[in-house]
Length: 116
Length: 114
Image (cartoon, rainbow over all chains, first blue to last red; front, side, top):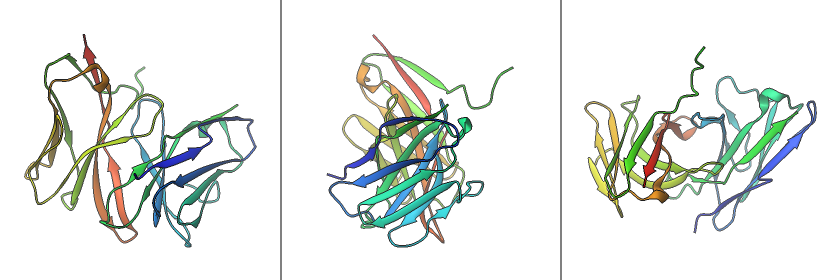
C-alpha cells in the first residue's frame, strides 16, 4: 500500500519551454502533497507544500510563478516548470501524506528534468 | 576549487558487518524522525521512524537511536548486505503553521564491500 507514482520519469526540453510533472497517490487519498528538488549528490530540498483544493505554500526562495503547483484532487498534484532554463535541470520528487496519523510521507520515484 | 555539496560523506563496510550511520538534527522542537534509503535515480524509500518520546526503535535488521539531549540520531544496520548500498538520509519532522514539514539531512553514502 501507499504507492506514489510520478510521470514522466524523465524529460528533456528546450530552454524557454514549460514542463508539467504529475504526482499521483495510487491507493490512498493524499490530503497533502509535497514537492522536492534534488541536485546531484545533494539532499532533498522542499520546494512547496500543497493541500487539496487550496493554494500551495512555497518555501523561501522558490518562485511561485515559475513553479506552478496544482492539487486539484485527492490523488493528483502537478508541478509545472515554466520557461525552463538549464539551471532548472534537477531531480524533482513528490511525496504524499494521507493526513491520517499525520506525519508519514510516501515518496514518488522522481522525475529527472534536463533543460538544454 | 572544491564545490560545496558535491562531496557526500561515505561509509564503507564489509559485507556481514554492522553499519552505523549518524545524523545531527537542528530543531529541538522536532517531534518525529525518519530514516530514508535512496538508490541512484530513485525516490527515497522509508526505512524506519521514531517519535520524540522514544529513544530506540527496532525493525528488521535496523535500529534507530535517538538522543534528544545532543540532537543526534543514528541508524544501525545489522549484517550489512550488498543491497544495502545506497544513500541514507535522516529527516526531522516539524509541525509548522502550514502543517507538517520534513527537513532532510545531508545524507551518507553507504558502500558495502564484498
